[in-house]
Image 1 (spheres, rainbow, N blue to C red):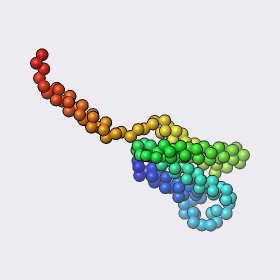
Image 2: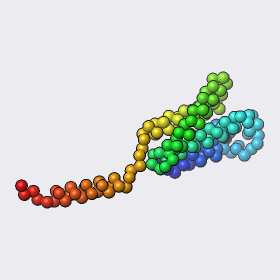
Image 3: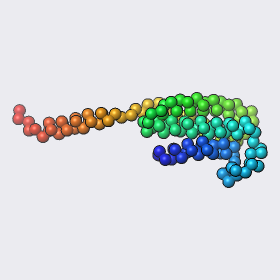
Image 4: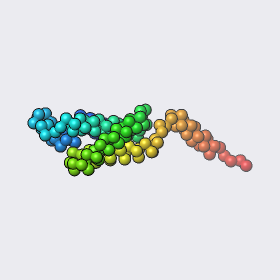
Length: 149
């Protein structure tokens, strides 16, 4: 899971602009692929890829109980909310597949991030494991002593 989410984060951060702009992978390095795109759409696609990448990292960090997960989820959700609002307004006006792709990904990632944030996964302390082991040992010891009453 760690590898797949980290790979997805890298794909969104490095190639998100191409994915959201509808540019095929083999045409990424061809300048004529970008002739039909405005600078605003390219910047929007780059920002969307970065926001999705940040949000997915926050989800991964939260699930794995690593520090910084909640912060990444909060920042990512704020960015996704802003991007989704802009994309929704633009989609209503232009009905473009570009905005539809952005809305599908941002709303999905936002919903998953909120769900993970609501789980409130807490890291398990090593001390809890030690206490549970001590309880098991004491129960075994107690059970091994014959009851003479």
